[in-house]
Image (cartoon, rainbow, N blue to C red):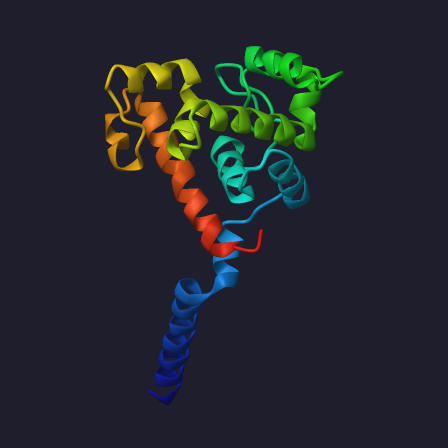
Length: 188
């Protein structure tokens, strides 16, 4: 009986410790929500006047930090840039010598190009971060059309009005990770 009681007490203590660690540990939270390529993200964020947490949230949502991914629609790289968009970015920004293959295999290049594009979208949507995130997924033309036609006002509180379900979900996920990263990595 004593042996059984000791095991039960030990089990309760271990479970209590795990609960405390899970709910109160920054370490556990950082383990669950890591940021990879911190230096590349920080440099690109600085270069294009973006919050690094936003850049990290887009990367987490797009590929979970896996640079070699290619989507069913053909988007490539760590930030899942569509090939035509990548060609346009290279033309507009002066990223010389960039190929789709290099975008697939070089996280630093994908982060830099994605940051350039987010900065460009930020200018187009006058700093409206929610509209920028939606435009990164659906394209700026679609988001401008939704806003012009009154289908969506570009606000976080009305994302349920976004006509594309994929984009609605995308905005929610990026915003979720952005808030997590702001809380866990405020010094970033």
